[in-house]
Length: 318
Ligand code: ASP
Image (tube, rainbow, N blue to C red; front, side, top):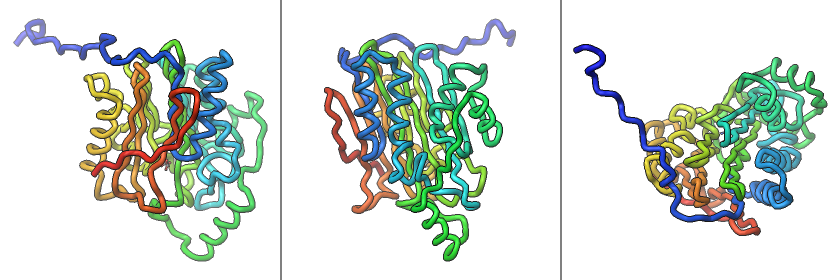
Protein backbone atom coordinates (compact mmCIF):
# COMPACT_ATOMS: atom_id res chain seq x y z
CA UNK A 1 0.00 0.00 0.00
CA UNK A 2 1.49 3.40 -0.91
CA UNK A 3 2.53 5.28 2.20
CA UNK A 4 0.31 8.27 1.51
CA UNK A 5 -2.83 6.11 1.64
CA UNK A 6 -2.05 4.83 5.15
CA UNK A 7 -4.33 6.22 7.80
CA UNK A 8 -2.66 8.96 9.84
CA UNK A 9 -2.60 8.24 13.60
CA UNK A 10 -5.09 10.42 15.39
CA UNK A 11 -3.56 12.66 18.03
CA UNK A 12 -5.00 12.43 21.52
CA UNK A 13 -7.36 15.33 22.16
CA UNK A 14 -5.43 18.10 23.92
CA UNK A 15 -8.16 20.57 24.66
CA UNK A 16 -8.55 22.24 28.01
CA UNK A 17 -11.53 20.06 28.85
CA UNK A 18 -9.56 18.44 31.69
CA UNK A 19 -10.74 21.08 34.14
CA UNK A 20 -13.86 20.39 36.10
CA UNK A 21 -13.44 23.14 38.69
CA UNK A 22 -11.98 26.58 38.47
CA UNK A 23 -9.90 26.59 41.59
CA UNK A 24 -7.41 29.44 41.36
CA UNK A 25 -5.91 29.03 44.84
CA UNK A 26 -2.39 27.63 44.99
CA UNK A 27 -2.24 23.91 45.77
CA UNK A 28 0.63 21.87 47.23
CA UNK A 29 0.62 18.09 47.58
CA UNK A 30 3.51 16.05 48.99
CA UNK A 31 4.41 12.52 50.00
CA UNK A 32 4.59 11.37 53.63
CA UNK A 33 4.22 13.18 56.90
CA UNK A 34 7.44 15.13 56.31
CA UNK A 35 5.67 16.56 53.27
CA UNK A 36 3.92 18.91 55.70
CA UNK A 37 6.90 21.30 55.88
CA UNK A 38 7.34 21.08 52.11
CA UNK A 39 3.69 22.10 51.53
CA UNK A 40 3.81 24.87 54.17
CA UNK A 41 7.00 26.31 52.75
CA UNK A 42 5.96 26.17 49.08
CA UNK A 43 2.57 27.80 49.72
CA UNK A 44 4.22 30.49 51.86
CA UNK A 45 6.51 31.40 48.98
CA UNK A 46 3.73 31.41 46.40
CA UNK A 47 1.64 33.70 48.57
CA UNK A 48 4.64 36.05 48.79
CA UNK A 49 4.66 36.19 44.98
CA UNK A 50 7.72 33.99 44.36
CA UNK A 51 7.93 31.72 41.35
CA UNK A 52 6.61 28.18 41.22
CA UNK A 53 10.21 26.88 40.87
CA UNK A 54 11.23 28.77 44.01
CA UNK A 55 8.25 27.24 45.78
CA UNK A 56 9.09 23.65 44.82
CA UNK A 57 12.83 24.03 45.44
CA UNK A 58 12.36 25.67 48.81
CA UNK A 59 9.71 23.16 49.95
CA UNK A 60 12.06 20.30 49.16
CA UNK A 61 15.21 21.85 50.65
CA UNK A 62 13.30 22.21 53.93
CA UNK A 63 13.06 18.39 54.05
CA UNK A 64 16.63 17.87 52.75
CA UNK A 65 17.86 19.96 55.69
CA UNK A 66 16.08 17.88 58.33
CA UNK A 67 18.61 15.41 59.83
CA UNK A 68 15.77 13.36 61.32
CA UNK A 69 14.42 12.34 57.91
CA UNK A 70 16.62 9.32 57.18
CA UNK A 71 15.75 8.95 53.49
CA UNK A 72 16.35 12.48 52.16
CA UNK A 73 19.43 14.76 52.11
CA UNK A 74 21.28 15.31 55.40
CA UNK A 75 20.74 12.26 57.63
CA UNK A 76 19.88 10.00 54.67
CA UNK A 77 21.02 6.40 55.11
CA UNK A 78 24.11 5.55 53.02
CA UNK A 79 24.77 2.92 50.36
CA UNK A 80 26.57 -0.39 50.98
CA UNK A 81 29.92 1.42 50.92
CA UNK A 82 28.83 3.88 53.62
CA UNK A 83 28.37 6.80 51.18
CA UNK A 84 25.19 8.92 51.08
CA UNK A 85 24.18 9.04 47.38
CA UNK A 86 21.35 11.38 46.51
CA UNK A 87 18.85 11.51 43.63
CA UNK A 88 16.58 14.48 42.79
CA UNK A 89 14.52 15.89 39.94
CA UNK A 90 12.57 19.02 39.10
CA UNK A 91 10.08 19.60 36.28
CA UNK A 92 8.46 22.88 35.27
CA UNK A 93 5.12 22.71 33.45
CA UNK A 94 5.39 25.94 31.45
CA UNK A 95 7.99 25.34 28.71
CA UNK A 96 8.13 21.64 29.70
CA UNK A 97 11.63 21.86 31.18
CA UNK A 98 13.36 19.43 33.53
CA UNK A 99 16.60 18.87 35.43
CA UNK A 100 17.80 15.94 37.50
CA UNK A 101 20.78 14.47 39.33
CA UNK A 102 21.55 10.91 40.35
CA UNK A 103 24.10 9.37 42.74
CA UNK A 104 25.22 12.84 43.83
CA UNK A 105 27.50 12.91 46.89
CA UNK A 106 28.55 15.57 49.45
CA UNK A 107 26.03 18.23 48.34
CA UNK A 108 23.28 19.20 50.78
CA UNK A 109 20.64 20.25 48.23
CA UNK A 110 20.43 17.97 45.21
CA UNK A 111 17.12 19.63 44.27
CA UNK A 112 18.98 22.93 43.82
CA UNK A 113 21.55 21.24 41.59
CA UNK A 114 18.67 19.79 39.53
CA UNK A 115 17.28 23.32 39.21
CA UNK A 116 20.67 24.65 38.07
CA UNK A 117 20.76 21.96 35.38
CA UNK A 118 17.23 22.89 34.28
CA UNK A 119 18.15 26.56 34.10
CA UNK A 120 21.65 26.46 32.62
CA UNK A 121 22.28 23.31 30.58
CA UNK A 122 20.84 21.98 27.33
CA UNK A 123 20.65 18.59 29.12
CA UNK A 124 18.28 17.05 31.65
CA UNK A 125 20.36 14.73 33.82
CA UNK A 126 23.85 14.56 35.34
CA UNK A 127 25.11 11.62 37.39
CA UNK A 128 27.74 10.65 39.94
CA UNK A 129 31.12 12.35 40.05
CA UNK A 130 30.28 14.55 37.03
CA UNK A 131 27.15 15.83 38.75
CA UNK A 132 29.25 16.62 41.81
CA UNK A 133 31.85 18.44 39.70
CA UNK A 134 29.09 20.48 38.03
CA UNK A 135 27.70 21.43 41.45
CA UNK A 136 31.14 22.53 42.67
CA UNK A 137 31.71 24.59 39.51
CA UNK A 138 28.36 26.26 40.15
CA UNK A 139 29.48 27.24 43.65
CA UNK A 140 27.56 24.69 45.74
CA UNK A 141 29.45 23.98 48.98
CA UNK A 142 30.35 20.44 50.01
CA UNK A 143 29.15 18.99 53.29
CA UNK A 144 29.28 15.72 55.20
CA UNK A 145 25.78 14.25 54.86
CA UNK A 146 26.43 11.18 57.03
CA UNK A 147 25.05 12.08 60.45
CA UNK A 148 26.16 10.17 63.58
CA UNK A 149 22.74 8.44 63.70
CA UNK A 150 22.98 7.30 60.05
CA UNK A 151 26.58 6.17 60.58
CA UNK A 152 25.64 4.07 63.56
CA UNK A 153 22.72 2.43 61.65
CA UNK A 154 25.16 1.66 58.85
CA UNK A 155 27.70 0.13 61.25
CA UNK A 156 24.96 -2.00 62.76
CA UNK A 157 23.96 -3.22 59.29
CA UNK A 158 27.62 -3.94 58.44
CA UNK A 159 28.09 -6.04 61.54
CA UNK A 160 24.86 -8.03 61.08
CA UNK A 161 23.42 -8.41 57.57
CA UNK A 162 25.94 -7.00 55.12
CA UNK A 163 23.94 -7.91 52.04
CA UNK A 164 21.60 -6.18 49.61
CA UNK A 165 18.45 -5.60 51.64
CA UNK A 166 14.93 -6.24 50.45
CA UNK A 167 13.05 -2.95 50.26
CA UNK A 168 11.24 -2.80 53.58
CA UNK A 169 9.11 -0.42 55.59
CA UNK A 170 11.94 1.59 57.11
CA UNK A 171 14.79 1.78 54.59
CA UNK A 172 13.54 4.21 51.92
CA UNK A 173 11.18 7.15 51.13
CA UNK A 174 11.16 10.26 48.98
CA UNK A 175 9.95 13.81 49.40
CA UNK A 176 7.90 14.36 46.26
CA UNK A 177 6.17 17.72 45.99
CA UNK A 178 3.64 18.86 43.39
CA UNK A 179 2.58 22.51 43.23
CA UNK A 180 -0.01 24.43 41.25
CA UNK A 181 0.18 28.23 41.43
CA UNK A 182 -2.67 30.72 41.09
CA UNK A 183 -1.97 31.10 37.35
CA UNK A 184 -2.76 27.37 36.98
CA UNK A 185 0.85 26.50 36.23
CA UNK A 186 2.27 23.24 37.55
CA UNK A 187 5.68 22.06 38.76
CA UNK A 188 6.99 18.95 40.49
CA UNK A 189 10.14 17.99 42.36
CA UNK A 190 11.51 15.10 44.38
CA UNK A 191 14.59 14.26 46.44
CA UNK A 192 15.78 11.06 48.09
CA UNK A 193 18.78 9.12 49.35
CA UNK A 194 17.01 6.12 47.78
CA UNK A 195 17.23 2.69 49.28
CA UNK A 196 19.44 2.28 52.37
CA UNK A 197 22.51 0.07 51.85
CA UNK A 198 21.89 0.02 48.08
CA UNK A 199 24.57 -1.13 45.67
CA UNK A 200 26.76 1.93 44.99
CA UNK A 201 25.58 3.67 41.84
CA UNK A 202 22.02 2.30 42.07
CA UNK A 203 19.52 4.84 40.76
CA UNK A 204 15.81 4.45 41.48
CA UNK A 205 12.77 6.07 39.92
CA UNK A 206 13.06 9.48 41.56
CA UNK A 207 15.44 11.31 39.17
CA UNK A 208 13.97 9.64 36.07
CA UNK A 209 11.55 12.01 34.36
CA UNK A 210 8.31 10.08 33.77
CA UNK A 211 8.99 7.63 36.61
CA UNK A 212 9.60 9.72 39.77
CA UNK A 213 7.82 12.86 38.53
CA UNK A 214 6.07 14.11 35.41
CA UNK A 215 4.27 17.33 34.47
CA UNK A 216 2.17 18.33 31.47
CA UNK A 217 1.11 21.88 32.21
CA UNK A 218 -2.17 21.53 30.27
CA UNK A 219 -3.09 18.24 31.95
CA UNK A 220 -1.56 17.70 35.39
CA UNK A 221 1.41 16.66 37.50
CA UNK A 222 2.24 13.37 39.21
CA UNK A 223 4.98 12.04 41.47
CA UNK A 224 5.89 8.75 43.10
CA UNK A 225 7.45 7.21 46.17
CA UNK A 226 8.24 3.61 47.10
CA UNK A 227 10.05 0.75 45.40
CA UNK A 228 11.88 2.64 42.67
CA UNK A 229 13.26 -0.48 41.04
CA UNK A 230 9.66 -1.38 40.12
CA UNK A 231 8.15 2.11 39.67
CA UNK A 232 10.70 2.86 36.97
CA UNK A 233 9.59 -0.15 34.91
CA UNK A 234 6.08 1.25 34.40
CA UNK A 235 6.95 4.97 34.11
CA UNK A 236 4.40 5.44 36.89
CA UNK A 237 4.14 9.26 36.94
CA UNK A 238 3.86 9.52 33.17
CA UNK A 239 1.10 6.92 33.21
CA UNK A 240 -0.91 8.95 35.73
CA UNK A 241 -0.65 12.09 33.59
CA UNK A 242 -1.60 10.20 30.43
CA UNK A 243 -4.66 8.77 32.20
CA UNK A 244 -5.67 12.31 33.18
CA UNK A 245 -5.12 13.43 29.59
CA UNK A 246 -7.57 10.74 28.49
CA UNK A 247 -10.14 12.21 30.86
CA UNK A 248 -9.63 10.42 34.19
CA UNK A 249 -9.87 12.41 37.39
CA UNK A 250 -6.66 12.73 39.38
CA UNK A 251 -7.98 10.11 41.81
CA UNK A 252 -9.02 7.67 39.06
CA UNK A 253 -5.64 8.09 37.33
CA UNK A 254 -3.69 7.30 40.51
CA UNK A 255 -5.79 4.22 41.23
CA UNK A 256 -5.42 2.93 37.66
CA UNK A 257 -1.65 3.46 37.64
CA UNK A 258 -1.13 1.67 40.96
CA UNK A 259 -3.36 -1.15 39.78
CA UNK A 260 -1.24 -1.44 36.62
CA UNK A 261 2.00 -1.43 38.67
CA UNK A 262 0.65 -4.23 40.87
CA UNK A 263 -0.42 -6.26 37.83
CA UNK A 264 2.93 -5.92 36.06
CA UNK A 265 5.37 -5.95 38.99
CA UNK A 266 3.38 -7.39 41.89
CA UNK A 267 5.72 -10.36 42.36
CA UNK A 268 8.71 -8.10 43.08
CA UNK A 269 6.95 -5.15 44.66
CA UNK A 270 8.41 -5.42 48.17
CA UNK A 271 8.01 -2.28 50.25
CA UNK A 272 5.08 -1.01 48.18
CA UNK A 273 4.69 2.17 46.16
CA UNK A 274 2.45 5.23 46.06
CA UNK A 275 1.63 8.05 43.70
CA UNK A 276 0.14 11.54 44.05
CA UNK A 277 -1.35 13.82 41.38
CA UNK A 278 -2.77 17.29 40.77
CA UNK A 279 -4.90 17.90 37.70
CA UNK A 280 -4.69 21.25 35.94
CA UNK A 281 -7.99 22.26 37.58
CA UNK A 282 -6.40 21.91 41.03
CA UNK A 283 -8.15 18.67 41.99
CA UNK A 284 -5.94 16.02 43.63
CA UNK A 285 -5.53 12.26 43.79
CA UNK A 286 -3.40 9.62 45.51
CA UNK A 287 -3.08 5.85 45.69
CA UNK A 288 -0.74 3.26 47.20
CA UNK A 289 -0.31 -0.48 46.79
CA UNK A 290 -2.07 -2.27 49.63
CA UNK A 291 0.96 -4.55 49.95
CA UNK A 292 4.02 -2.99 51.59
CA UNK A 293 2.06 -0.97 54.13
CA UNK A 294 1.19 -2.02 57.64
CA UNK A 295 -0.62 -0.63 60.63
CA UNK A 296 2.67 0.82 61.86
CA UNK A 297 3.56 2.19 58.43
CA UNK A 298 0.53 3.79 56.84
CA UNK A 299 0.52 5.60 53.49
CA UNK A 300 0.39 9.29 54.39
CA UNK A 301 0.46 12.41 52.27
CA UNK A 302 0.34 16.14 53.01
CA UNK A 303 -1.91 18.58 51.20
CA UNK A 304 -2.53 22.32 51.25
CA UNK A 305 -5.70 23.28 49.37
CA UNK A 306 -6.87 26.30 51.28
CA UNK A 307 -3.91 27.79 53.12
CA UNK A 308 -3.62 25.12 55.82
CA UNK A 309 -1.61 21.91 55.41
CA UNK A 310 -3.21 18.64 56.50
CA UNK A 311 -1.62 15.20 56.70
CA UNK A 312 -4.02 12.50 55.53
CA UNK A 313 -4.00 8.74 55.18
CA UNK A 314 -4.26 7.84 51.52
CA UNK A 315 -6.08 5.26 49.45
CA UNK A 316 -4.83 1.65 49.16
CA UNK A 317 -5.33 -0.33 45.95
CA UNK A 318 -4.99 -4.12 45.43
N1 ASP B 1 11.56 5.75 45.22
C1 ASP B 1 12.75 5.81 46.03
C2 ASP B 1 13.81 4.94 45.41
O1 ASP B 1 13.53 3.82 45.06
C3 ASP B 1 12.54 5.42 47.45
C4 ASP B 1 11.20 5.75 48.04
O2 ASP B 1 10.54 6.69 47.64
O3 ASP B 1 10.74 5.05 48.95
O4 ASP B 1 14.93 5.37 45.31
